[in-house]
Image: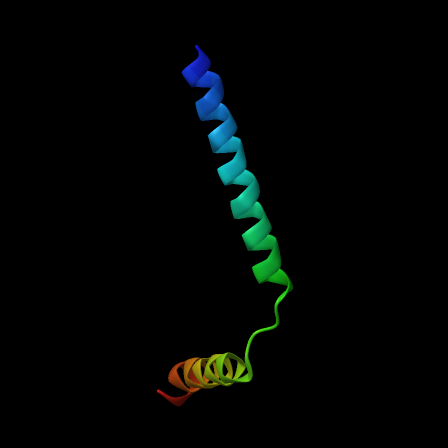
Length: 52
């Protein structure tokens, strides 16, 4: 049973670290080049539906 507690502790640490990394990533702004790519994709998506 000691290995179960140890595993749970390790899993808890992994969960906490993943949440911390995710939260940090969500706080970061997207680089301008990604915003430009998103705008290009949206423009193509719009012209694809209306332009065809």
